[in-house]
Length: 482
Image 1 (cartoon, helix red, strand yellow):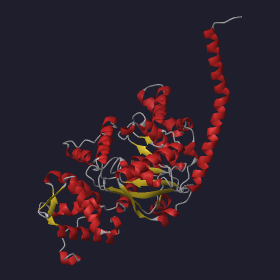
Image 2 (cartoon, one colour; image 1 turned 180 degrees about the vertical axis):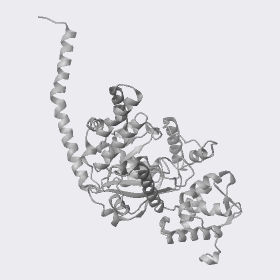
Image 3 (tube, one colour; image 1 turned 135 degrees about the horizontal axis):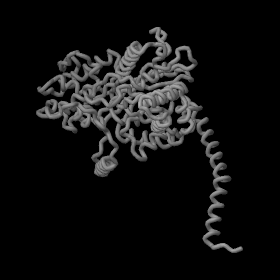
């Protein structure tokens, strides 16, 4: 029997596809999985916080586990009744929410791609430093504890910077806003273990699906990073905590369970924040609308092109220092024991009150470890001086006095090269280059047109300075007289 050539070719192609699908693909999948498991075992030997099996599970399995959670099923039933729709429709909607939230963690992407990019980008933009670091207390955190890094939110660089600095100890899972849901970027974030959150959603079903995922991750020992402020600071000062993600972590905690939840306060500060002018402009809007960040590849390409051109011309300068401090860990088990509370048994009113109390407590712990950097110190002193300028000696005296006062209060003051004069020089140079400070006739004063931006940087440490007055010190009083 003869057949046309094209039929023979088609049959041969289909046979080859079947052979690959039935024989080669399973073999390759087994080989890659074996190598991946071996690599993960090696990673867990050097990581202080191990990667739990939950984080390594297939995304489809996590989605199914979430969809058949009893509380999610109850929320599906309630929404179907409220909307008067078939339960299957509400269930399909919940599945869409689960697919939107659940990440697809890849250890290779996280440690070989993500952290490498984070390291390069962080060091290209800033002089990265670690500030306060209570190593002894951090070493006492139980190996099986669910560790939650609680971080102040100054810039979208926070994700990058913390990922880089913590990569030698753990693989973090972040809650990321909708601004990052763009092609390619969202795939990278999912592979890095991040999950997307609709921060303004009030839909009960969505919030239940999100709450149960966070509970499952916490109960399974996934290391997480949380920004309790809920968004970027607009005026530079610490914002009151929003209780969404934190309440999901607290609410299902079993004080007598086998796994503790340990919060690690993390304080961030920058000599220059990439989004500073956007945030300051948002404060000035009449309604104070929340700024919306959208990833724009054109803007990114323009920024990279300008930076490359400046580097080629020898005019590229990094944006000063970026400093991260780690505070003393806070055990949730010890906290609820001291407060004699169990979040699972509290009525709604008291649960909200206790959650707010714990949120404020964590935010205060974060505030205490925010490092004071050169730009924030100089900005604080010049704003206190008002419209009148300060001579070089007056500025030096006031900045040195502020450094001393903050150190006496237990704050971490980052002094580059352990040289106070160099720290002053760095902060002043950055402010003058950006025209936030005017130098004229041997004195320095704040630029009236840039007071809002100067205040933005001073507010980074305003909670450390408090209401105390800052006065220029006589030169002789600080040993600066010639």
